[in-house]
Length: 380
Image 1 (spheres, helix red, strand yellow):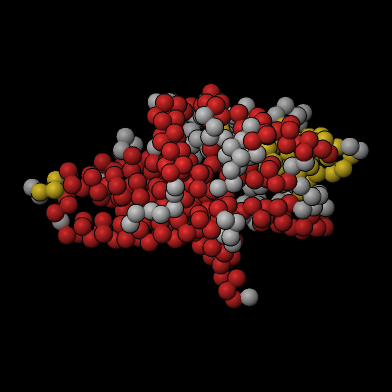
Image 2 (cartoon, one colour; image 1 turned 90 degrees about the horizontal axis):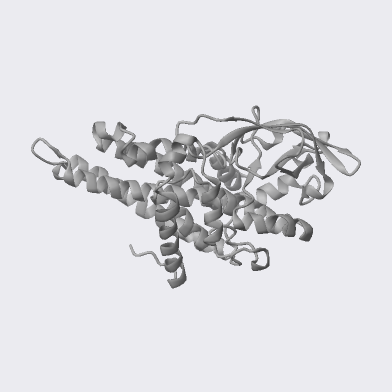
């Protein structure tokens, strides 16, 4: 089915993204995978190309458009290029909205130009060794001391953790407040007491620097409080739908691309003296995956359109996230199986996609959490 979501300017933007990927990402990606980190030069190149801060107002150096369809194009093309380790979606779609909607004017002028140029790479630190999806379990604390907050605690599984120049840290500022006692503090590179631990060794997305972060009596100026004091829970809940939609967009793009690759493979690969595509079982497998992808794509495009109009709610974002990521996982497994032994070889795209995509059902809220959100909305 022909997609009806995009207009001429989105198609032109897609060509710009593809050109950028061909020049600045694909030739270097294997080296980044070996290094376990993306080059800062690539981030600055993305800034020069206008790919960072798409929704940031123009006066701060951004693209000045709240049209999420541009972000969807960016996510789809990075996914199709097999470059999920370059966490441009995290920077633009997850952290960007916190800065544009919650920052004071002084904070915007201090941080957003670098955010858009690629000079300031960002991260958000929620997960802890003992608290993943359970925000109420956060133990990192911040206590007042004059004109500073004194931050203590540890975070883990932090994407962009090594590269990040700005880290939005979720910390407990009121011990008795439960989820309502949390605030957002922006920790900047070089603050005394802020240390980075290991660049964690993951099974996939090797070039995406995922780190442990440690805060020992870090003195964070009060002007680095982002949003309302003790208002982090509300802020997080408000911005999670876009994060989950962004993950879902990557998931369906990955599933579609894997299906495309595998369809081509079974047409060429022979078994028992004829192409695999001549076997009924193979045709049924392809038919099932194609149908699931088509149905999911239709729903995702509707979610993207709704979100671009400011109409996507938490429940439908959760539906999109759990369904699309679970589909991606199923399609990756089935496509690897159809590649046979070659599918297990890292030189084949399907093998890399299998390991790169496995985290999709975990971060941004696990599948189980998504189902709980949906179930509560229907059965309250």
